[in-house]
Image (tube, rainbow, N blue to C red; front, side, top):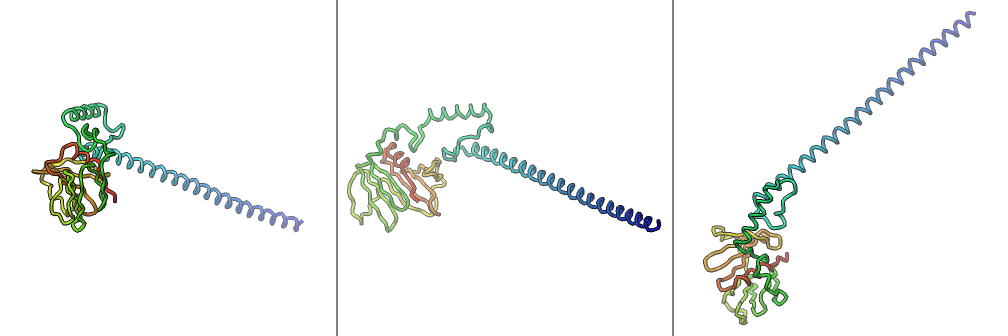
Amino acid sequence: MVTKTKKTKINGQYHAIDAVKLSLIKSELNYFKGLSIMLTVLILCVFIAFGALFSAMYLETRITREIFQVALKDQLPPNLQAPIAGVIDVADEVALAEEKEVLADEETPCCGESASTDKIDFSQWLSFSKYGVKVLFPETWTYLDRPEQKHIHLFADGGVRDGDSTEAGNVVISFIKDDIYKNYPAESLAISGVMSKRYVVPGEDVLIVPLDGQFLRVAFDGAIEADVRDGIIYSLELTK
């Protein structure tokens, strides 16, 4: 009887120890389960927060760009002047459309948008490309290249000049270090996607194009007809 009692006590002790171990294991499992749930929630919160932040930044960037487009509409090339839908209200759009119609009636835009250049058959024009510039000119004109100065002279009279001629052409294409025409009235336009300035100075019409740390200068004398001058500007290309 004594032996059976001892065995019963020992078995009871083992069962108690197993119950404690099982309780500890369950506690650890519950702890890790709760930890995993908390980490999952934190990760979701981080993704949601960053998503909201990037969305706000994107919207702010769009609105800022639209503000600059409206403020600088006369300085930007045509491909950057289109407004973003939903940012400008209908009244502003109508006002802008009416203003553009009035301006179109009052003055003729240059560089290919005018009726004068539409009448020109550019397929008959000659072309010359050098110094990163391609220029088209009427088939009856001639040109003179002066590589020592990096000058291209176009002559409207069609006369052929010797290489050592010092005569200036009716159109002179050259390069200058600084824009020396800043104080003159200017019109903004795009040449091969580069924002440029067209100045009206006494005795000539000058186009200034930023190019590789310097400025491309295209000077027209007063004898050039408006449609030919606009055609040369419209067809001018930057090849590098």
